Length: 500
Image 1 (cartoon, rainbow, N blue to C red):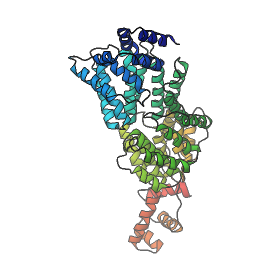
Image 2: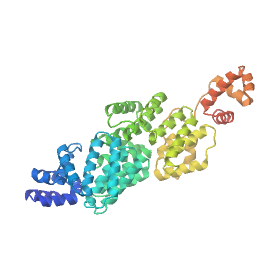
Image 3: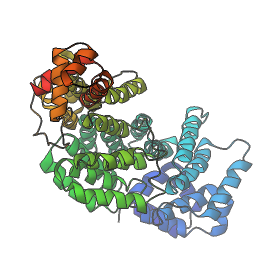
Image 4: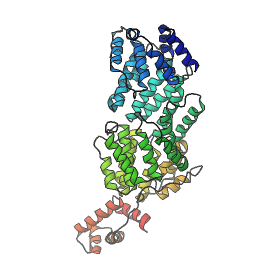
């Protein structure tokens, strides 16, 4: 028996309820992490009347029970606690946070992502404007982690990372055991954001810390798998993805198991089977995967990517046009831009990427994959690949280890970036067919192209093709559209780089 379990057992045996209250006020969440069963047993021995007269500890008992009931609290206990907090002339901040985080639990469990994000913002404001900090050393880390997860599920990854980082800082105040849990969540936040170098550093940090192996295992498994996939470490990725299959996923992050499997299948696995798995999951988990949520948008982007890799571009478009999908979701933007590029619609691809640049203000958080797509679109239109842009992509890859961004590139762009890298990335999988920018011309289109090379006027082109000027214009519009060109000079440059 551990010292903590022995302490709690002795308090319960001697019926020292005021001593138990002092322990809960000072170390409840620490003990909930380290000795959840011992804490629950101690609270179960407390007389019901004593708990109802002191609703903070009634809520503590409900929280200890919730670990065995998918995180849901007893409605009656929660109602008593809320009424008690509202009756206080100046309720303690920790108790106000208890009310808010209880609401957050229900909203997240019900898949009400927007409501949960709004409640998370209210929690942040409550902490920022608190005039008392009693119990913060124990309460704040778990509250910030749950609040960060609410923001993550709403697609606000930057805020989630900030909250996870703040949670870890608070655990350093008195060596709180939630530090390891915070590091795992922070690693996941970085992995979702595509910064695999930072995710790996956080995973190494949490692995070096002492503590219970059980809490946060699901989060760490997803972070490790995403990091290995993003770094294109196929051997490690295969083993880590297999580990996620063994995770007992019962949280609001359980959808990440499908996301991890989809990413692996896209690069190295059986894409046809994975398409069925993602489609089935979206159908069976409507509440969790509503369009506009992180889960819903990410899995739809994964599905669209798989369809593109299989060459089924109409199906990919149908997925991406799902009503309610966020146009600002990073993976959705990437998939839409790539879809246009695969269709030879370079201008539309560049327009989507320009929207992405506006969202980030052109800051370094502009994804390396977007830079690679931009360079590939320009190259396929006949523009010279800017060496400085390729160097910037290489610097981004060195900083983040997001080597999977190069999967989006044409052979020329991949080679150009590789020249600026200090070390060669793992072998790049060939995912999308046809590769960005590749197109074939029919015999008639080649005739139109030949006439365009020889003549500058519509009338002369029409005469060379033995058609009317209006028909010549129709042929030229079709040729420009296929090449992704906006006029004669650009069409000739693209054709020269790809067909001569």
